[in-house]
Length: 122
Image (cartoon, rainbow, N blue to C red):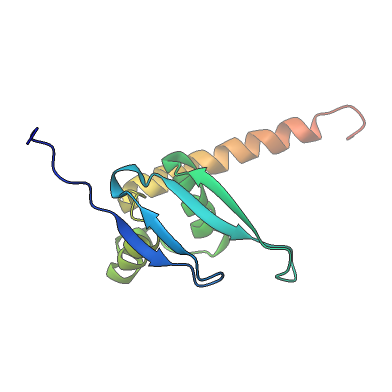
């Protein structure tokens, strides 16, 4: 034996097409999602890699848009939800998410300022 552990293959059945899918857990970094039009038709399968920075940005936008408290990221229920649905996302503390939200606000404020300074926007 060469000292390498045996490869564990995880199998599951697709709920949509009932095809048996085998996955090597060492290489499961790619995420697959079904994307459809607004009416739920024309479904297609897309793949993408997890992006921590994009996840943090979306978390900031959610907190701002839904007027949630910064300490939401420390709620047990929210942490369980995130751990189940996106285990790769490293949830920041409430102080860090506050800093991220303020930074996002200032960036968007600068973008708006530049937009309204364009010629013809008098």
